[in-house]
Length: 67
Image 1 (cartoon, rainbow, N blue to C red):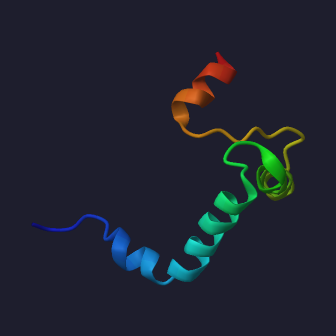
Image 2: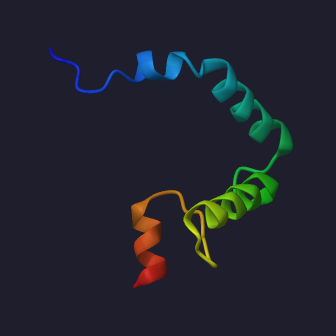
């Protein structure tokens, strides 16, 4: 089998940071919304230069907002 995208190898370099981010989310009790999502939306607005940003879980949810 030829691996198209070796996520284990890619994620290995970020394993400590990813595990800490997951632990922080679990410990905070905020899996949806919360300060981290607000922070992400604010940083994304600045990065892309848009006045409005809504973080969603996947493209299906996105379609609901733009329909």
